[in-house]
Length: 210
Ligand SMILES: N[C@@H](CCC(=O)N[C@@H](CS)C(=O)NCC(=O)O)C(=O)O
View 1 (cartoon, rainbow, N blue to C red):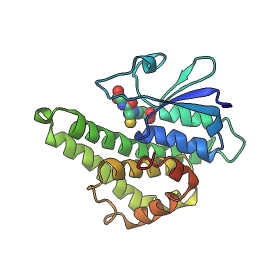
View 2 (cartoon, rainbow, N blue to C red):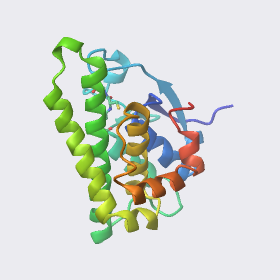
View 3 (cartoon, helix red, strand yellow):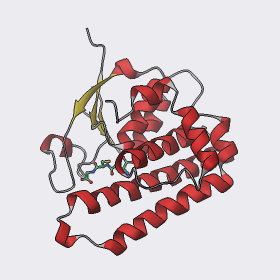
View 4 (cartoon, helix red, strand yellow):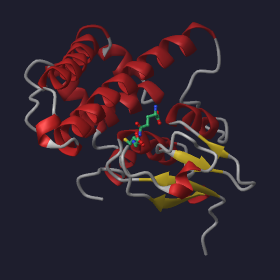
């Protein structure tokens, strides 16, 4: 019988949802959450998801008392306070702001990749805007270059909220933008990603097989 007490509104392809799922796996909390899959886009909202979550985005986490937590950053921090292992988000001081800023870079890469996907897949072809797509892809390239040049040692040091975010962002780029070709320019990042992709939490949430 399921012991789940919370509901995660979910779609397997979403990198933001995957981040939450990886946190659940890494902290041993998967049994606490039931997944409710939704099929949504910005132009096809899901009414149930809008309750307590007016932006209607995923991930959203409904708690036992009906309270809904969003977005992925808030949900990850909530879940990180619910287990007794090493925290995935440093609790205080400079390490906290530093790792959260790195996590924010990962989120920004995800945002740009998701917006690219909407522009290239969802928007009617005659309305697509090449300059918009180029600008989003520039954000991704700048982000990946910054990770390669300045953050490999930090990513390698610990698989925490920042590393989880970067891994999920790279997974999404590979899933939705397979022609993007980032590995040649970022060989250290590619080697790191190949390694962390073997983690049980990453394998269990791989969107190309779920
Ligand atoms: N900042 C949000 C971003 C979430 C997000 O953009 N989710 C996408 C799916 S990957 C979504 O719900 N899109 C539907 C919409 O924008 O209405 C987070 O960290 O959770």
